[in-house]
Length: 125
Length: 58
Image (tube, rainbow over all chains, first blue to last red; front, side, top):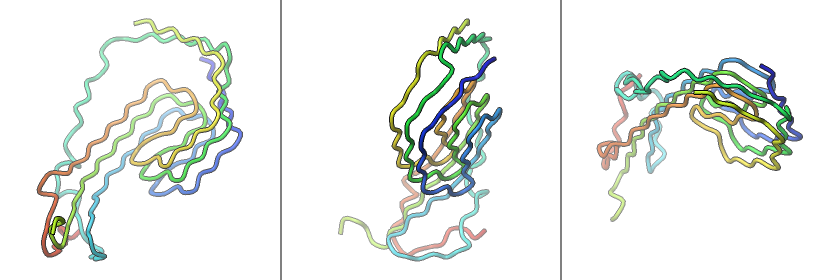
């Protein structure tokens, strides 16, 4: 099936961190997984080796996504097979994310984040 | 289900995004299936007030 062509005049992206991908061109399958343990403290204390993913079940519990049982027949007529973008301006792409210029087939991405907030004194005093 | 698509002119001027993060995608192009799943957890007990106790070591 003929794919469309993506045309981008200018891209300005500052940062690509934590296994992020900048793809110019087509791909067929994209699969990303990211898990984070976000710990906020109101003073600068950093113990270095702390936090264990196996400790919390948010990182292991399955996603309940109902499978698509209906068979879907899709027919695409590309009367104008060009996707035009003048400019893209991104500050950051992070945590297994993708900036993808071009066509793809299947994308399956998953992200699991657990937050902790540690305050030395109660905020309202 | 029959899904008929007619793609004509598609022009976007400027895309300005602060951040694309935690398994997200900014796609300029076609895709057949996209499946995104995200879970995050901030239970009341995740707010701890008092002396800093490091989380369980690695």
